[in-house]
Image 1 (tube, rainbow over the protein chains, first blue to last red):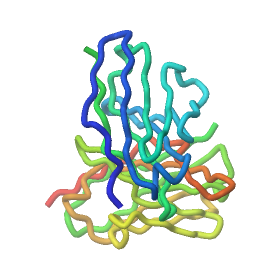
Image 2 (image 1 turned 180 degrees about the vertical axis):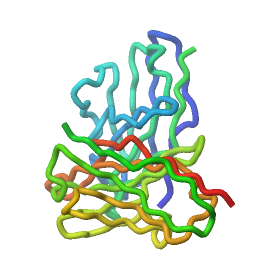
Image 3 (image 1 turned 135 degrees about the vertical axis):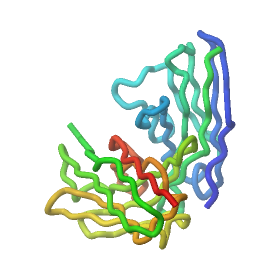
Length: 110
Length: 122
């Protein structure tokens, strides 16, 4: 099973909105509403910022939002801030009853 | 509070065996799947596999099937990741991760350990 496809990098200026895509197949992203997003700062542990496509855990900023259409899930960061500069990964449950990750997206705040 | 406490960093030579651990607290160990995620230096996250401690049901990613062994000890609330013969390419940070299961069986990660760095020299 191949990794989910994410853009290698996305950038934006402070205050702007950016969107990161996560493309899979009908056997993973398209087949289940169990897509999660993680934020990882350099040298730090990944942090869950979205689960079940669009649910934010307690304490996560509402500037982060998730959605899904067909085989592609998306993470939108609105009102971009310097602290949002990090790597972002998506994951999905699959028909093989395992999880797979996306390749990761580096977000740069210009 | 849910806590996943991983064992300390390890340095080994190629061909050696190794087991790292993840001790959990703050929840009922047997009721959640727990698994392992690899992150090679400068690379992305790779999902390795999971175990359900209540009945030792194990699922591996095809990429890791036969390469590692996942186990759990309910008496000590500990999950393990074992290599019988390490390779230099196993050098990575390894995270344990708690997985929650939906009513229909879908899984997602909701908590992470702090990571165990494994360095394998050739």
